[in-house]
Every structure is written in structure tokens, then in C-alpha cells.
Length: 116
Image (cartoon, rainbow, N blue to C red; front, side):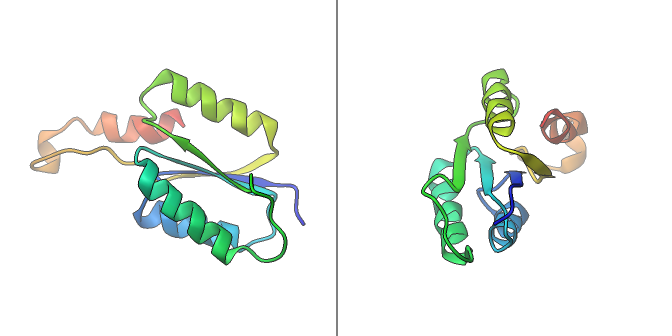
């Protein structure tokens, strides 16, 4: 088994979920799943375990639920990354916004991923 870990932001759905499942099928030491929706992250976690090849410990797919715009979430993710051998950072976080994309500050969307 490898000793590397992947941190996937936006892992609660869409591209982030699909990439988390893909990374789980590799011989990594683990995946850290980050997103705002705990229920959806738990679904992603189950899918990761289902697609994992070989033995995996109960802590293989670690969930960190919260908004990347919150400093304590960044600190929590940093601690998790330091505890494991983080090799891959996959940034798929998004920001909820209603209306036309051009009516919103794009730095908010870019900032969520850049912060991670």
C-alpha cells in the first residue's frame, strides 16, 4: 500500500466526489474529504470504501465538513494534512450563488479553492 494521501475539496458532489472515488481506487494511504454537506460527504465516504482495493482502515476516508472560507476549517485541514503524507491536493470547492454568474464577485469562488 502507498503512503500518500489525497485531500479533495468539494468532495460532497460533482467532480469532487468523482475524483475522490477515483483516488480511493488507487493504492493511497488515505483520502481526506472536504465539503460543506455532511450527509453528502458520508455518501462519498461510503463510495470511496466501496471502490477501495485491498485492506483499508476505518480512518482511510477522513471527513472534514465545513466551509473553506472559515479559518478553523482551514486549520483543521492543515492538521489532517500534516498528520498524513499529503501528496495530492484536488481543488473542486464551489460557492453557492443565485442569479447570473457575472453578478457575483469571482474572487469568492477562486478564493475558496486558492485558500485550500
